[in-house]
Length: 152
Image (tube, rainbow, N blue to C red; front, side, top):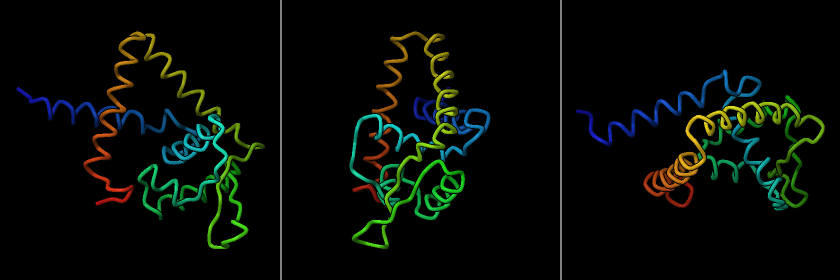
């Protein structure tokens, strides 16, 4: 019999591989979609504070080299804008390019369709419970693996 820890790992890997599947986020890589989601939700919530690549690394736990590659790709696709900090030329602030952000919104809407279908299949209550569980698991992982936003 497989113990609970093994079952959790199996479920986590299965869900992770499904979410990271190119068929779900076909126009953007998973990391590009992740960065866009962060910027999108911050924008939706009216957060006006400008963010740097370092801020995004801290939040997403992506390594700087991967983050820079992801940001360069998003900038090349003209989905995001990098604006230099007027006081520190080494820093760049990141933001959504309103002219081309439709590319991300199309991917986001496709993902939301998938989520809506999941909710239809498992119901509102189970969706709510799963969401709360996902948040608790993510917080537990963060508390075990990361210390003040930096990898141990």
